[in-house]
Amino acid sequence: MGDLAPLARLAPPAPVRPGQMTRKQKAAVIIRLLLINGLDVPLKELPEDLQAELTLLLGNMRHIDRDTLAGVVEEFVEELEALGLTFPRGVAGALSALDGKISAHTAARLRKEAGVRQTGDPWDRVRALDVKKLRPIAEHESIEIAAVMLSKLDTGKAAELLSKLPGPRARRITYAISLTSGISPEALDRIGLSLASQLDAQPDSVFDKGPVERVGAILNFSTASTRDDVLEGLDETDAEFAEQVRKAIFTYTNIPSRVAPRDIPKVVRQLDPILLVTALAASTAGEEAATAEYILGNMSARLADSLREEVADRDKVKAKDAEEAMNAVVAEIRALEAAGELLLLAGDDEEED
Image (cartoon, rainbow, N blue to C red; front, top):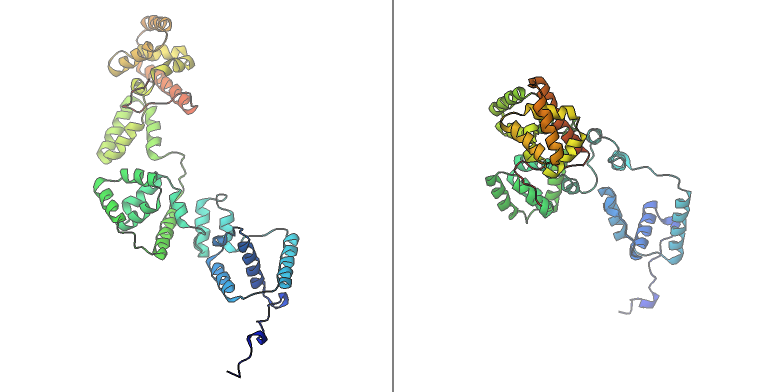
C-alpha cells in the first residue's frame, strides 16, 4: 500500500492538441460539438463506411481542452469561409445529386457500371410508387417477399394493393404478414434493395398512356365495323385485355351513360350545328336513336324543337357522313373533358343530385 502514489499526484491524460489531430479527428470534434448543442446532423446520409469510421473515432477519443476546441472551431470556420463549392463524393454521390434531373434509365446504367447502390432507404422509393407499379411485384414475387413489401407500405396503399390481387393470393400474403415480425434489419434492407433494383431495371415507357388507353382512343374514332371486329379478335386472344379496352372506349352510343344531363348544353354549344344535325339525323334506330333523344331531351325545349325540324328536313345521311358527325360529337366531349369542363361518369354510375 505504501508504494501507491496519492490520487492527487496522478497526472491526468494529456489533452490532445490541434497540431496532433488528424482532419478526421477534427471533424469528429465538430460533430460532437454540434450534437451536444442539440443540432440535427444528418449523419445517416453519409456513406456507411464513413458512418462507421466516425463512430469509432468518437468512441476512441477522450477529451480536449478549451484552447484545443477553440482552435479546431476556428480552423473549421476559416475553411468554411474559404470554401467556394463542393462536389458529391464519387459516382454514388453524383447520382444522388442528380436524382430526378437525369433519366432513370441513365441513372440505373451508371449505378450498375460503377457497382454502387442507391443511397438512402430503398423502402422510401418502394413506398413512393403507386399501386399500379407495385401490383406486378405483389403478383409475381414470392408470398414472403410480397408480405414484407405490404408490411412496409402505408396502411391505405397496402389495403388498396391487396384488393387488386386474386383472392387466394391475397389471403396467403395476409397470413404471411403475421410471420414477418422476426425478420432482421439486414434481411429487410436486402429485400428493399432487391425490389428497388427491379424497379431500376424496368424500361421507361416511350408512351404517355398505357396500352388500354391507347387502343381505346384508336377504337373511339374507328368505324363501328372495325371496332367490333377488333374487339372480337381481342376476345379470342386476351379476354381480360378486351374487357379493359371496352371500358376505355367512349363512343356516340355511350353518351347517355357517360355524360351527365347538365353537361349536354355545354357540348351542344361547342359543336358545329351542321355536324350536330347530321349526327341526330343519322340516329334512327337502336342505341343511336336513344342517344339522340338523350341529347335533345337535355337542352332547352326551343333549341330541341328547332333541331328536330332541321333533322326532319334532312335527306338520308350516308354512312360515312354519319360516322364523321358522331365522331365529331365524341371528339368535342373528349376535348371538354381534357379541359376540365366536364367529367365523364363511370359506365354504371348515375348522376347524384
